Length: 148
Length: 430
Image (tube, rainbow over all chains, first blue to last red; front, side, top):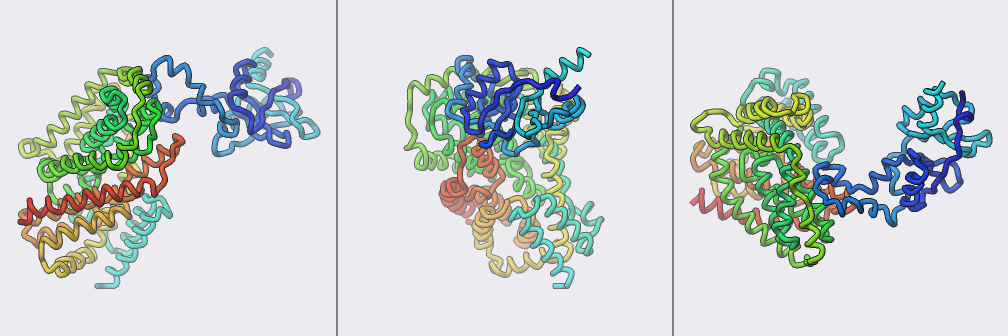
């Protein structure tokens, strides 16, 4: 089994797209992460859903879990408001990670190794023309492997 | 001086420069310097590891170790978050009242624990409260760093320089309470006045925002009440044992180690969790410093410097005291006050002995402590707490620049250090 067999269409966002739009895509399409493309349309990085949360949750609550507990329910429910007016670029980690990208002929072990090494729940797949053709998700990979 | 003495001075200055400029990690600089001192025979294993005069001060290392374990457990209880939110509610969302309560909590906590831990615990909750009030958090964070340095001066365990001074000068916890704490209380009153002049007048009260403070649920900060009470009980026992030193005859280092051990034994905190809370690099840094300074003692450099200091001040205690206070404040503003005090302590020890020992000459220890502790407020890099506050502010998207901090720090130092001079004069030199 190869990457082309697990390939699925995958939505992408640009670096300067509103991060709230990326969050909506994650929620509506039940995605573990989203592919971020550069100005030339090639994959730039993967934005995991947890990085979106990292931008939304105040740093002081991440530093001190006790503070997340003291916030009352009404204010806690509104924590995603912090994403308004912010871009995908702001949600990316400062240190750029290895881009989890492979080609159509990658085996499942190659895909799994890439996901494990980059700790990314999805891998971008490039076609023969080196352009983005889709992605393989962790869920799709495990589904197919456990079903066999 | 001999060639070896000059070599040891060169090694010391090189290591000190690296520490001050942060060109290399301070632990590497201190250990590298210590290693070269041993290599050139400026000191030896016997002196470095076993000498009370020129070796690693194990009282300091183990006191820090014990307190780090206690603090590591205490910060898991959520008590600081509880206190800070309680203070915000008591202030009814009025910004200056809130600032006063937060600086008082910070100063009191810094007197019992170390400054860095205190600001690490108070700063995040300050960010939360200021966000709710929609007030600029920078003045609060700056005030807390400054308060932690002033409050830490009050006790033996409040600031690492005090721990070094106590060990070297044979001073007890009660000595600090009697000689430092009263003046620190006066300084805190003045500091609150300065806070009003520097920050308080610009605050605006918003009743709607203030009402949202009352919705915070401070009790939620405490997840494990049993751990809280156990930790507070051990902290009280430790403080009582410090105070009862004349009766119990336990050294502060022994008290802190026993307290740390008792806390781990009595609570659900595991040994590995407690050990993980210890800042091992800091302890190794201290060890390296002690070996380097010990080499200067062994090669006679410290003795010569002390003689020069006595000659330079003509043996006049008043002049030496004021020079030490002012000089320590200036130097501690520029370089980390820990290596400064580690270097100055053997010199001050000899100066104290030259003035007759434990009598009137002891004022020199207080001049060194006040100068080093308060001088750390002058610049953003003068004390570890200042650096930590700047880091927290930057990570939370409200950066405080070096000069933004320093302009307030200089004002506070320029007011507090000169206030100490008449205190020392009237109490010890008249």
